[in-house]
Length: 365
Image (tube, rainbow, N blue to C red; front, side):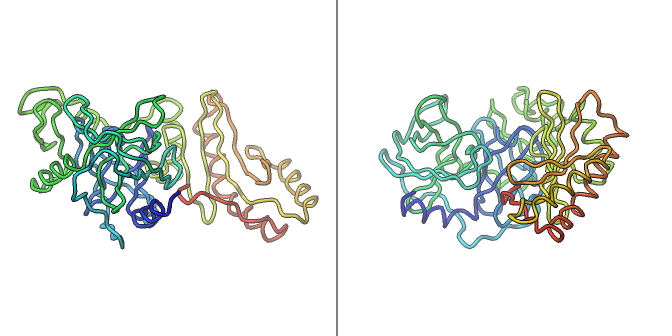
């Protein structure tokens, strides 16, 4: 990473937001009181999960959805103040300009790549995008494209697969135009019609049709219906809800949930092969007392009916493993209730008795 890129990252980092929905993750950035991202990142939902270095995971409200420009605005539950707020570009973007893309590709936090503008105006459909060669990947979508003056020149929107770092960003001019008009409406819950381009108050939409031109608004239907789990996923979330857990806030995807319990985290994954694994990293194996530690874990495993200890590399886990066809509400509730209750107790016992080291977690886990 060049010195210039590092300075841009240091300046912009606190404004970069990670966005999660049951359909995946993406990026966004703070501009004024709103978070800017792509429409395809929010997935047609009214509420999404947002987090940042200075912002614990919380639910943000999607107040503007624009499929034409692939733009969306999210209003955080409380105002976010940063020391170095981002601003839109004040000059014309030209071929050869150095640009820096920041985001969370594949959920990896604060990934930054530098490149140049290979074509400042590349027409795709009705929109003139900025084409650049900084490497971006899924998860970068919705993040800012910045210049060396730390200004927003565009919103990272899409890539061409297998194109050797060919990315496209919606120019800041489109963003400025849309945001000015949206703010002038002084109304949240706005959908922009992809046909007539009018900004429509969601409450005025009847049967998901645009009241101005009559075209079907798919995003209106998705926002109205929301996310509805089904099958085994619905059963898992029913069990989690019975444990008085915040299920929407815990979702990382349609089949993954994470929870904070005291100082540890519990991770639930439902895999394609039908296996459901609920586990918790209790700590890391110390260099001493290993034999006595192993003896304790094995003796405790003999007592369990539903849970089990395991070791992966140097990390000790307490887990509940079940096949989806065998999961029932009653058994699942008992097992997860025990896991959530016992995991923090065992974690402290292992640390105090055997000198087990604290587990390591990613800052956004």
